[in-house]
Amino acid sequence: MLSPSYPVLTERLLLRPITEQDIDPMLEYKSREDVVRFVPYKPLSREEITERVAGIWSRTELNEPGQAICLAVEERATGRLIGDVVLFWHSAEHRSGEIGYIFSPAVSGQGYATEAAAALLRLGFEDLGLHRIVARLDERNTASARVAERLGMRQEARLVRSEWFKEQWSTGLIYAMLDEEWVRSAWR
Ligand SMILES: CC(C)(COP(=O)(O)OP(=O)(O)OC[C@H]1O[C@@H](n2cnc3c(N)ncnc32)[C@H](O)[C@@H]1OP(=O)(O)O)[C@@H](O)C(=O)NCCC(=O)NCCS
Image 1 (tube, rainbow, N blue to C red):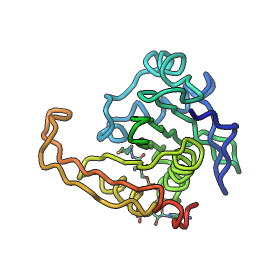
Image 2: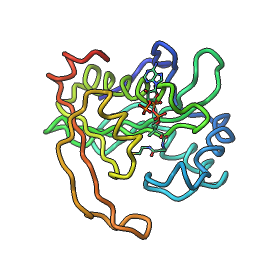
Image 3: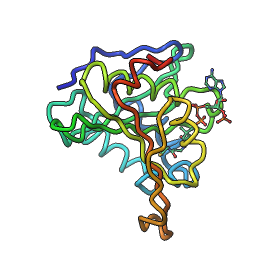
């Protein structure tokens, strides 16, 4: 069970539940072919974002495995929405989960995705009590791999041309971190 007290603050960012006010700023990056190239959906329309904001992105706590919380990420200095992140709870028995992240190209190269993902690891390990958290990505998504590596996640698997993804074979990488690694992490 995870019921964070919002907002979740980091040095430069604020993570909070997604609201209707986020639809337009989200549309700016989630409607872009280049931004969603390696995420499991096509460029989203305003209607599709609106539907998700009212539906799967409205969850604010995790009550059982199989659920995920998506959070908006704001830049504290300006209050603008710069991206969003997701924490999946996969299994109670194995205490396993997964993180994901997508940010506006307008803020790339400042370490914001890494800082927000570190906050998700903290929620997963320290508040939900997970034992292992993974990040799964396409090998061509080198910026995402660098985020996982900066977080101190280890590459555990390279699944060669394993998934038919957006009309091409995708080679998947699995990065992971254990709770005992998290306690030694500089991001903690
Ligand atoms: C994946 C994604 C979030 C990475 O964005 P990013 O801007 O490269 O990542 P960060 O915000 O963590 O910034 C890291 C960069 O900022 C630099 N940086 C500057 N200031 C920094 C700081 N204070 N702290 C950390 N890094 C800093 C780092 O050196 C790094 O640059 P490098 O990758 O060239 O070495 C982004 O490319 C994206 O949203 N892609 C589309 C969606 C997607 O594919 N999501 C992942 C699916 S698996």
